[in-house]
Length: 178
Image (cartoon, rainbow, N blue to C red; front, side, top):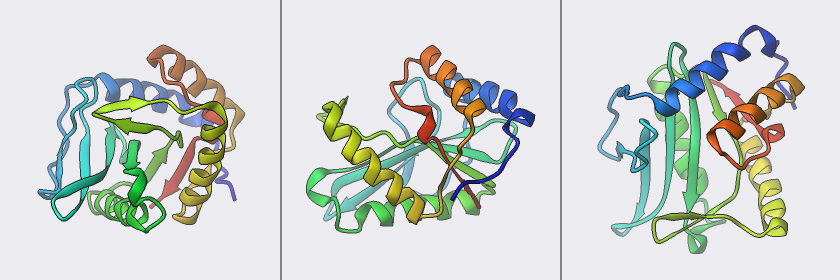
């Protein structure tokens, strides 16, 4: 399933807005206590953490695109031993509900599997990344996200990712309308 949107009408605002959001000092509306400012100095978004018995087992981070009611989920992680047990689905549902409650009309995500070890993002081996990417896409589709399927958007995001030194494949960029 894909969303038919004429990206040429709003790709420039997305490009500018995402770039601005990633370097902006803007603060976003506070939510509940489960949400804290993130620990990445270059991003000014929010972090939702998931705990089991006071142990942080995962997090999801997002940023608002200025001038729109659009949000980008840029990091989403569940510890390996808690995966495939419904915790990721629970965390994503909480985040989607929060974003909808504060007026999000579109939510974007770029599936990109990674590990998070001792507070540091770790890349994966090429084959492991491919396998996990397929699983992530299927997971996000089950939660209402669709592949953008736009060569123009992919081309534009590829340039943005290069500028921001993001190692992701823009062909897998996904959108959810709320």
